[in-house]
Length: 366
Ligand code: SAH
Ligand code: SF4
Image 1 (tube, rainbow, N blue to C red):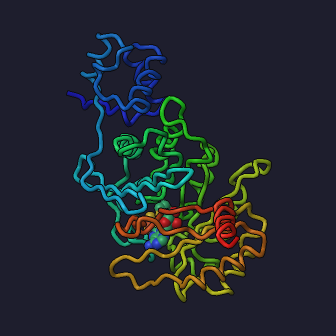
Image 2: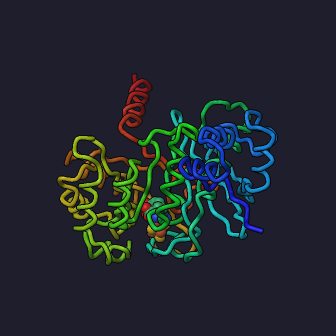
């Protein structure tokens, strides 16, 4: 017997192709995508606009494999962290961060990671395997349903997705691109391209490939302003040094698009947080359409790194900002559940928010 097809593995093109093999027209594929992703219906018999015969056939040749939550932690600030179990028993993390005007889901792309960034807990845990398309989009599928059962929320709760969970998304290229296409597909989750972000540690050849096939937002985990330090913190830099990485970033978005690459920079006390580093960073980013996101280091067991002091972080921000670069400091979220899980998580707090805070403070003063 041949294995059943997992329908969550199929993006629009693959779903259409599958329906062709079943001698069905492509609009049936579109109906199925809507049943699955928009309505969350997994019972073929409830798919009322499909004929009985087609429903039977689908039940014979296909299935819908969902992820099982083994842990659901909710922080005081509303951040959720789920541990989701895969069919083979492996577990991955998915995190949801609610904010006033948006809700961000942080999605994993691999079980573990092959790259060994020294400040990352995933990186110190080794690599197990790539996630399938169904396991990547399955995290969105799961979270949409899990959140809609929370009391009192019926609006669209997930407005943004960031590929900042476990794993290096560009080393699972095809599956990640396919899952992201479902996130943006009007028949599935319909997110705008600016609201789906891929974060990479700098796998240069695949960055060019990504620019060719997808127009999602791009974040690059920089973390150091020179090769010597970056070789140590982000070892893939030895293969693709800064000159090559910066060139790929410069060319990533069409020049007339005004889109910028977000550079993530984790603040490690006494390692990469000096004023000299800030100045070097400014020089490195000259001529690159860039914004900078400073991330307070999130400690994990057995790490030797410590997060920079708040004062040091703001001094660093000040220097970079003075050069005209938009520079934000990520807010830590879900601290009481360790929601910041090493990576991700938190706020790309932008200028608007700073202005809001400023205005709020001002009201208080007056
Ligand atoms: N592999 C990809 C995406 C997952 S990591 C990448 O490296 O970009 C998502 C982000 O979290 C990256 O910027 C990563 O460098 C950062 N990160 C990892 N460990 C961290 C920690 N302990 N504290 C703060 N940020 C961390
Ligand atoms: Fe992998 Fe990203 Fe962690 Fe580096 S920071 S080890 S690339 S998950």
